[in-house]
Structures are given as structure tokens and as C-alpha cells.
Length: 296
Image (cartoon, rainbow, N blue to C red; front, side, top):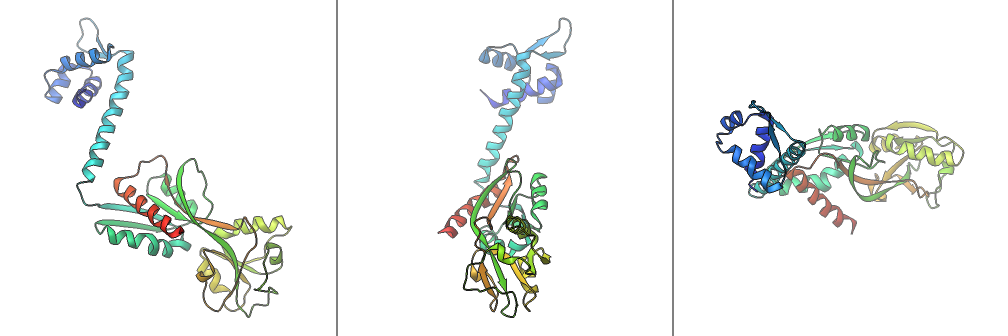
């Protein structure tokens, strides 16, 4: 069936008059097109009250109108997608990234992608997960990247990559009574001044409460960098997440916390509701290939 028939039927339904629709579309044979549709689908779609020119849709016609609109939207989407294959990748991608992961995300994913596709531009926000989820839901960001627990999995599609475990990091000058050669449990943090970021705090608090105490938070910040800077002179210990021991400044001692629940997963997420643009899909494919390589 010709796609033009569906578009013309929509116009007839919206104007309610064949003559008006014919003038609007410069299509004199609309009546014949409607009859062709009715014959093809075996249902009466339009009826005219005796003595009146105004058309009304039958029950079948109302149902057909919704389907015709859906068919036309699908055809337009296919056309745009196919046209994109004949063009250089372009447009703007919008990212919301946790401050603690912005440098990592740019160096690992965004810069290599930008080098491969020089016509694409970028908008980059550094913000907490709560703001990330809001901007994805509002369709003001295409992707978000975080290493904190994500809310509402029903609303967001996500891809998780490597795990980041929790470490206690401190200066050799710190008088905290810990042995860097021995395993460290959350219970040993009792009465020790702790520095952490907001992302780590909720999981750390939960782990400490299982041992019957609240962690003694002396300093809390947005990023790992700030927490690590605060403990450089021995002012307590920093509890931060990291992919490995090489992620910390030289000169500091570190111990991984021995608790199976104290970790984050680096996660890229996007809206389930809004369809990705061709450029956004291009980035997602690039990211998934790069993340798969990073895991091996």
C-alpha cells in the first residue's frame, strides 16, 4: 500500500471534508484513495451524514487513524535513519557525569570518540546522580556516567563495566592503629576519623551499622580528590572507591576494605523512554566496544 494513502487519510480525518483535504493536498482523487483503503482492509472507514458534506470516522476508521499515524511515524524514522548513512556523523551529544569520574570518562571514552568523529560536538555536565537522573528523564542529557547505585531501573537502560572497590587510604603519619599488611574490615573503622565523598557515604554507613556503630565522619566532599587531599597530613583516613591501588597518590598507604557489599560499578545509563538519535547510538556502540576491551 502506498504510504501517501495513509498520509492523505490522516488529512481527511483531521479536516473532516474531502474538498478541503483535496485543496490542502492538491490531490483530486482522495475519494478513490479512501475507497481503495476500505477495499484493501475490508472495513468501512468514513461515513457521511445524508445532506451534509462533513465526514465522520466509523469505529473502524478511528482505529485505523491511530495505526496510520503510527505507520507514517515509522516510515519517517526509517527515512531519517537511512539518510544518516549517507552523511558524516554530526550533531551534539549531551553528557552528565559524576565529578569523581569526569576525567576518567573523558580520557577513556570521550576523547577517543571525538577523535574518530570530528564533526560531533559535546555538552558536558559534572553533577551528582540525582541531577543526572533528572536530566536524563527530562531529555536534556543523552547519557550519564556514574559509579554510584542508580535509582529506577524501570526508567533507565544501563551498561555496567568494571567494579570499584572501597579502600582506606591514609598518610604514614596518621595515628590510626591500622596495619597496611593486614585485611581491613569496617568494624576496625570505629572511632577513627573518616573522610569520604557523598557517593561512598551511604554504603559505608550501612556497612558500619551492621557492626553496631555509626562512622565518625570528619570530612565529606563531592570527589575522591578532595577526601584524599584532606588526609595528606595524617588527618584521619579517606574511604574512597577505586579500580585498583594505582589510582591513589604516591606516598599514601592503602588497604582494601574486606566487605563484599562495599563496591560501585562504573555505569553508563540513558532513557528507556526516549529513542536514541543516530549520533547517540553511534556513541553507545563505540562505548560498548571500548568497555568490552577494557574488561579484558
